[in-house]
Length: 309
Image (cartoon, rainbow, N blue to C red; front, side, top):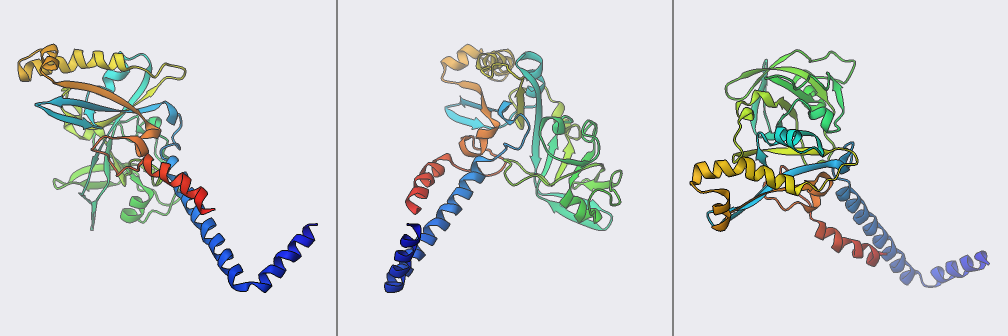
């Protein structure tokens, strides 16, 4: 029976070559378009899922209102990472990162303006899943003036050809306009494209003096936390208590009013957790490290796949 269907189809194509060509071309374009859309959708929904325990990791942002101006930011105060671990039992670990762009980095006669340098806490490699090729994950970012290079950066400065080649660990590079000496302590595989933040170099957070500030209303670092396995991730009430405990006294100091009075006058200050795997498509904070995608585009494109077929 299938042979008869095939014969009929081939006979129809021979007898109506022009119309058959149009139909085959249209089908090919439709399938190719659908495939490209599916590849795009697959890439967009894959962001940050390569991290171990990605479903238990959150980024903490802030929304509020001050002086009749609304604000929403993806950054937090420097002491928040420590406070989360110490005062919220459901949280087992937290880490901070801070991007610094367009920094001059030198090694001997080579000098480049690096677009993506991240300051990162010493637990960065135990928290996130990036492939550290050389160096100890516990030590590479411990202490001031430590620097981890991506493979691309190591190749650029030291002609590094991969593990087994002459290692640049222990070399000294000069960082910034003040030419601060930093020791190369690790080599990491280039971050994947489906990460909501990227980097060419990682510098130890302790290098930045302000990382030790204990001020809760100065927000300049991105803070991530990981909820313990089987713990309840709904911790909003505890975050609200942190606002009252630490932000309230600073509002009293700077504005001369209590937190209750601040709220009665229309002010607001709230910590807002967002899941790591939701950041790329769903985060509405304005100060993203990299431009976000938009979940609405996917809602539009999914029906388009069906129409293309």
